[in-house]
Image 1 (spheres, protein in one colour):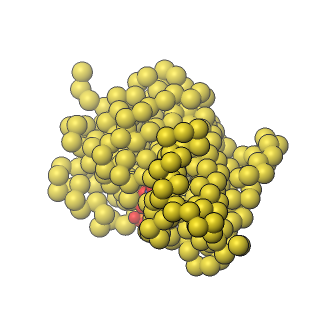
Image 2: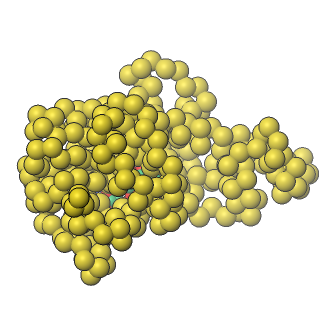
Image 3: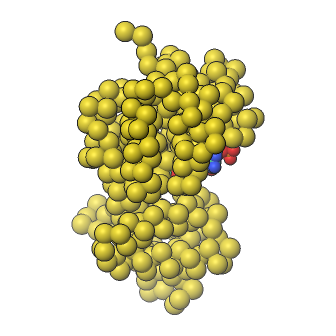
Length: 291
Ligand code: NAP
């Protein structure tokens, strides 16, 4: 059976290496990026470059998008020269951006009117996960469509989980962000408490990380805080975008999220201090400034 033709929109920090994996697995690949210069490297390796998302959709069976925020995905799918203008029946759009679950449902409705479907498949694992094809991918959409496109996701990720109907991938990713941000707040408080009480914070981390209070944030981000390393793995501005999406969904479903609301405010303070482009571990500095 011949391989599905893939279209890939959005060659940023995440999208560029992900599209590279697709090409390496010999899928026929067409790429589009708003800033055309970013298509050069993949074009030199054999990818075809489209002039618009509509043109790309016209030659693809499966269209992958990974851009910044909800309005950007809306523009690429439903805007002028968007995917909907060129898409052929029975095609699938896989949106791997982190955006609003509501917007994914609306775009799925628009695609269904063209006999196509949407899969939402946001990722966790950062730029390193994208480069090493070890992303965790959380998937929402029709089960049969998921089964059809799952081999493509396996090219980019290590852990692929079907979560339920369209929007469920985004909702799962938002749970991921609730946990990452509130856990980091606990880690920040413990480290500032340790420091102010004369403990060696590195010894504190070593003593605790294997026990009930251990976490990825404590083991991986804790040492960065101890070393005053605030370079971004994941930057505050992106976390705030995700927490905005969490709060929007929590509002619609009337869920109270007191701890997430607090950490959202503390990250806002980090942004106000000019630290939006720093790593999320800068939260420890905000806590320190309160003591
Ligand atoms: P990025 O490096 O800033 O890249 C964003 C990409 O989206 C660029 O290709 C950009 O095009 C394109 N884009 C944005 N708005 C657009 C628009 N209106 N029309 C057309 N193209 C548009 O971002 P990234 O780090 O790859 O993140 C992409 C998504 O993955 C985000 O939703 C993010 O939350 C999610 N994510 C990121 C990470 C991470 O660690 N970076 C981890 C997990 C999930 P230009 O080149 O023209 O600007």
